[in-house]
Amino acid sequence: MPTCVSIGMPVYNSERTIAAAILSIVNQTFTEWRLLILDDGSQDKTLAIARQFNDSRIEVIDGSGHRGLPERLNQAVEMSTGKYFARMDGDDIAYPERLAKQAAFLDGHPDIDLLATSMSVFTDGGRLLGLRLAPRSHETICVHPWSGFPMAHPTWMGRIEWFRTHPYCAGAVGMEDKELLFRTYRISKFACLDEVLLAYRENALSLKKLLRARKNFARVLWRVAGKTHSRTAVARGIAGQAARAALDVCALSSGLGYRLLRHRVQPAPEQELIRWHEVRRQTLDVVPMLAR
Image (cartoon, rainbow, N blue to C red; front, side, top):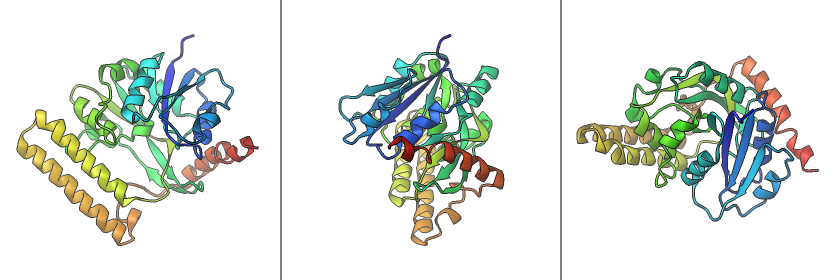
């Protein structure tokens, strides 16, 4: 039986986190997968750790030089087999049912090109900060394209043909997901599962990263939207990003952080805390034992 899901995991200097990320894929209830780990010129022990996993479904590719995430993702797509291509980062953790539930949804909805999920947010120490919930329908996801698309990039799974038809832009480092979504949302159909199926590692909000993200999305609007929309519309979109950047500065400089930027983390109910505890037990808590 051919591989159903190919997973692209570009990594760069991920020696502290990659073992848990790989283990979370090995622990999937869905077994028809192929994990492509593409090293992007790491200078630490990332490659050595990845090669310690004795599983024929895992392929480790030693990249030549640091080429960036968009090029590595395109490389992974070209190497992929099966029906679907999924994203995975070397510092996040997939819940055991992630691949099964996303593949089942895509099987049952042939009109959907790209699927994301909600996710939890955790720290290096394994503490759950909260949830980042996603809207479900294409219309809701794309209702405010000038503000962005609430589809967390690490949770993506889509049809391989869609990724091959719409490759990542090599020059869009740091905004590769936003550029691709804006370029394709009017000719594609997106969806999200509201269930939490991935844990995203984030120790604290970084003002530098937030402002860089705002700047990068403004660049997307200028480069992509500028070709198909009026200058007035583009200017309004960029102004909106500037206003949100001001809110980011206010939130972090005042110490309010997540309390002011509530869209970034929402409180986790007891059921989600229990689920996270089990996922952590199967991944983060196992890694120290693997290193012995």
